[in-house]
Image (cartoon, rainbow, N blue to C red; front, side, top):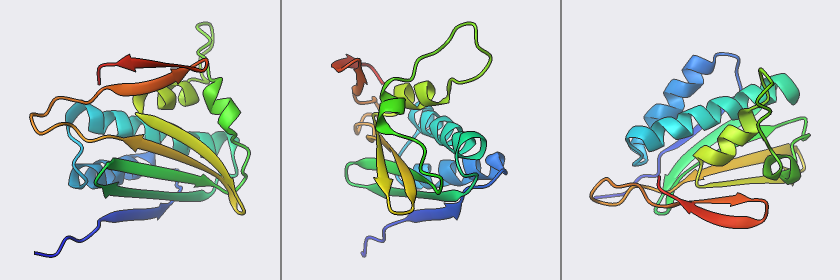
Length: 151
């Protein structure tokens, strides 16, 4: 039996419900389940919202499963997002917005930002659950210190 890679590639859109549905379908097809799948769907929703509200309002979403897990990339044509912004994201308890980068950072197993010739690329990665359905430990970097938390 031939193994066919399954990949999503779609433009950033204001139809966030449709994007969430596409990511959910592709994430499930890629092996994510339950809370881990919903965490990724929420993280992608936040990333796309950031592109629409703070970036160039245009870009591309690419999602693919692989042996190490499932990865979603959100490219922003404005290229304003930096790794430093993601790493320093904090929650202002008195604020009514501005939680997106913090949420992304805490829901995903790995988050990276790279600058490209066409803008910035936010990469969110989730490891797959073990065979018995138990989530793997998440590695979250906070203030340069790596901590473990149950997924």
